[in-house]
Image (cartoon, rainbow, N blue to C red; front, side):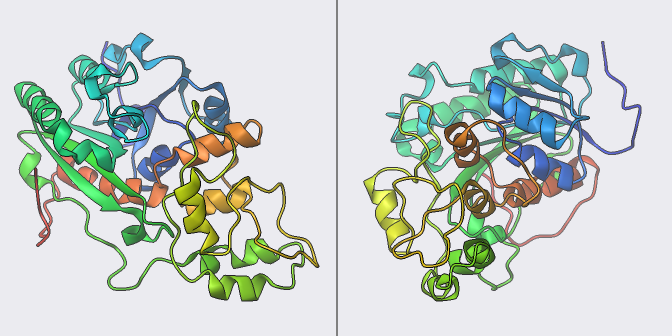
Length: 331
């Protein structure tokens, strides 16, 4: 049964693999009305419900979710699992049980959206996945969509870390010529450094060296990692990542429960709130669960400002608002 847009004239979306709501928040900021969010992690579902009590959250495996009742939705979005395409996940692609691109295609067939937006890691563009990408594009074309993929760096959209991410965008063929990928929003102004981003949080308990620390933490952050359920806990990732954080004056072996106190010496650790700000979340966004569960949600998130930038372009395309851009590209 087709679901009617009863409440607003805003374009609609359903989202799979919602996690802590990074992409969902970006979609909301871009003007989309969410009809459903699908997520199997109970802590992430509680995060979504705490922050947006009105959201329709389906808790469970996306393989058991049907989109038939949402036929006519404008956008199907999702941050499908990254391990099948990441080096840390051994890049098994379609041979990885966590590959959910096939489920996304099933849902496309069921709800027939005007557009699709699926986020993944940079490894998705590696040569080993050329056949996978071409097959995905072929399947989407047979369903009536023109697909492209775009490598975006979070720092180009005001997020204080590099965090390269691939976004697969597919637009219904009668609307596809209206789509242009987002261009960097900084207009030559760099993203905030780690020090600029976190100075107030580092100083909130009266640490006297916070200003000095911030001045030395004068680069954007390395990509925030450490969110895997199979490896590690609430830390900033493996040795290489920790070394990068150490160069910015941050101890990455674990996360702190609170900002440094007066008299603290040495390298401070990040708190969950600091990590969330590095990821582009607003300070009012709360994360459910213990420290490890909350950090996994943060570490796996799609930065809301980047999701917003892509979603705005998709909204312009499906609402018939053509825009002129010199940066249009498609794969």
